[in-house]
Length: 218
Image (cartoon, rainbow, N blue to C red):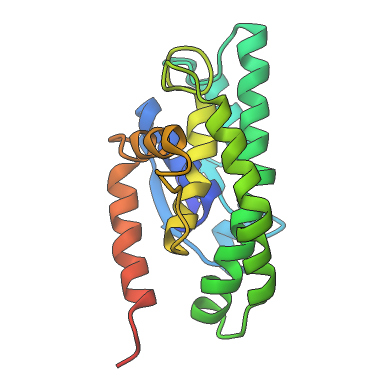
């Protein structure tokens, strides 16, 4: 199985964590925004990451890939069979992908991707507004929702934890990670999820890459 994507994408990061938790073997092939790689473009007609080639079966979008893999490799289950728990996992997946990642994306894209990867100026006003107005509300909601179990749904790890923790890594790169003083439960929970063996080695590699990208020009 080939996975196409970049380590700094929250959607790719979510998928890598999922694959690690499942114990599914794969090869990560690095691609960037609008990458012309023919395998990537065949698997992702819209040029969005991640994309997958599973022995000739191609698919794009992290959630679509994960639902495919969950059906193919049902154990250990990361999307519960219980109707209520499944609904909550799907909700948190949506929250992570379309709400939290969108908010973080305004900061990460405008402060890092645009100037460092694309060579153009980002919209710093939009980034500042997202950090000051949008992000506190989302983190406050997350803080209120984390149960005593330490997992978002049920008493064990699910896709919900991976989907919501993943975008928080991009906030770290922007210097605005989860403030442990303001959001102690969210900070401890995110640290625990992002430190799991399924994703920690990828994050370490990502942090080394970002340190090079963000290093002051000599």
